[in-house]
Image (tube, rainbow, N blue to C red; front, side, top):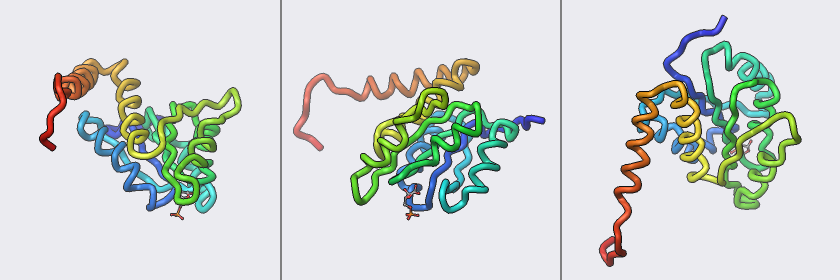
Length: 166
Ligand code: RP5
């Protein structure tokens, strides 16, 4: 049985230390009026939690998964292996390699198990939320309007000329 839930997007991350990055995804979803839930699911420290979450995500009523991880970032790919839901991967900036390790770990999925990979860090987290919104907006005209308004506000905020004012 599939639950009907108001949170259609779930933001998962490999560690508490990923939250300062992944919070930007949650905040952007909130700005767009999309309910989301955030959970810590570590591919290597809580592998059983990963399997039960990913296998059950669709029946829990989620429609899109945003997964952020750093370093040897297995979480998005392993999650995608267990669920047919769209998975957007956010490479979290790592200390050792500035997130290039995370990016390459997430982006190079073999054909057959897709992970939509975003930019490293905050920009990727925000864009993952916007992509999730675009997916949901296909079947939600009210959300489509809110997304259009969100984008228009960013367009309107661009001045014609640069200013010396901060
Ligand atoms: C990954 O290792 C996490 O996604 C995190 O980005 C990184 C470091 O985790 P912590 O040692 O801070 O828990 O699994």
